[in-house]
Each structure stands twice: as C-alpha cells, then as structure tokens.
Image (cartoon, rainbow, N blue to C red; front, side, top):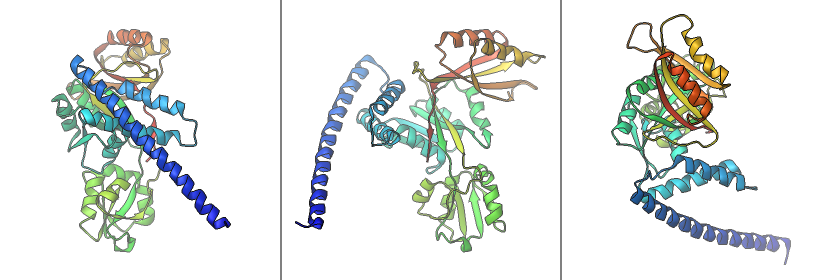
Length: 366
C-alpha cells in the first residue's frame, strides 16, 4: 500500500470515528432533552418560571470550566446556549420582544443571548417593547442602553420611569458596520442610507471614500438595507446579518472609525433573579435641587467601597430643573453592603427605584 492509500485509509478511519461520536452526541442531546422535559413538568405543577437565567449562567460557566480543549470555550458556550434554547422550546418557546426590524444589531444581540429557538417579535419603538413585556405579550424584551462611542440611549432610560420592569441581563455586542449594495460596486453608488448613529460612527471613512455621495438617514440600519435591496444606485451602512437577509453584497467591510465599538443592550422582564456571584445592580433616582445633593448620594457608596461603574443624568421631564440619575454598581441588591448603602441614599432622594440586579455581561464579538 503506497502513501496515498495510507492517507486515504487514515482519513476514512478518522471520519468513521467522528461519525460514531456524532451518533453519541445525538443520543446524549436527546437524553438531556428528556430530563429538561421532566424538569418543565415539575415546574409547571409547582407554578415556577420555566426559564431560569441563573441556572443558564451556571451551566455555561460549568461547561466552560470543564473544557480542556482543543475546542474553544467561547464556541462551546454558544453551542450550549443553543442547546438550552432548543430544550426550552420543547416546553414553550421564549417570546422575546426587541427593537426591530429584523436584521438590526438589536436583533443580533437577542439571537446571541436567547438562541435561535426563541420566538422573536420586532417592535418599532422602545416604548412598544416595554409595553409588550408589561402586558405579557413577551417573556423578555431587549433594548439598547448605550454605545461605547455615542453614549446613552435616552429613550430607554425614560421608559424605566414609566414601567415597573426589571433588568434581568445585559448583552455587550461588538458593532461592526459594512457598506452594502446589490452589485457590490462602489462606482454605481449615488446615495447611501443608514441610521444616524451608524452614519456618525462611520463619518471618517465616509469622508475619505464617499465624500461626493449624498447620505440619507433611515429609521434603522436594517431599513436602510431594505431600501438598498430595491435600488441599484443605493448603498446601505448595515450589519452582516442585514446583508444576508436582503441578499446584498459587500462594497467595504468594517468601515466604523473606532474599531473598539460596543453597544450595551438590556434584557427586561417582570422577574427578579437571585445572586450569581458576578452581578451588577442598577438604580434610578432623583435628587433634591440643592447644593451638595449629588455629593450626599454618592458618599454612602464611597464609604461602603462600592464601585459605581456608570452614572448618567438627564432631565426628569416632569418638573423644571429636576434631574434623574441612572447608576450602575458592582454587586447584587441582596448584598448587605449594597442594601445598606441604597437605603441610606434613599433618605436623601426624592425618588429611588431599583431597576434590577443581574449577571455582568461578557463582550460578544460579532
């Protein structure tokens, strides 16, 4: 037998071994699914929530810790997230409301967090997402809260004033913009469409490469892609997901000016979840309009050595010169030192609302 025959035999032998492993994986996945069905039955009788984010996080961390390679842990987490999503769908698919339309970065963040087996419901406004969750039309909602370059999404903060919902998770998604068109030929482009924020994030590239092209604003990057899919002279700044959805070709990839561009999304729900050991707490408060008021609310956190990872302010829109502060801190509301500090801060506030305690999100690359 020559070397060529040896290689062919070795390939066949190894492929047979992979086929055998695949058969084991299928059997084990179905065995796991049967256990999940039994758990769902117990939860139904006990009237317990069928989805447990704390348990999901624990599973993902456990499989990552068990992994000894060479299979990458990041990919393993994605696979298990899909396994969990599919297992939940055997009982009842999670209904997830998100700021649409389909093909936006919010849609992509939702898919990354909940998996492909959830049922996704797009809405045209952030307010509609909150309303859908409050009315039990969806188990969860997913909305943008801030971008690393553009700052906070004010309309999301406003909704927390009007709706009694909790933050149950955060998703940190790397955002990358592409210039797309039907032909993929930059010479045919006479106009460019995109969301104002995406246009701003690609301003330098556009000035350098498309300075003579008129740019039009659209309600979303996905809507821009839809417009470009119907006009041979139009291009869109949009995601890779939008390119697939609307069958567009790439003129240029990764045209954002700042390559370290992340958007933070919040998952909202009616649920309150227990500690995971690596949590973040968010509160909303209004201070009295007098000198030193902000200093007074920050002092208890300083004394308790609580790290405040984010502070945002905006007018309350309810009273002239009254401001609302959105504060993120490390830890869970059930931590004794956070409970004590928040209680002390509340005494100096006109209004204080606990928005949620939830696992610290990991950065998800596109």
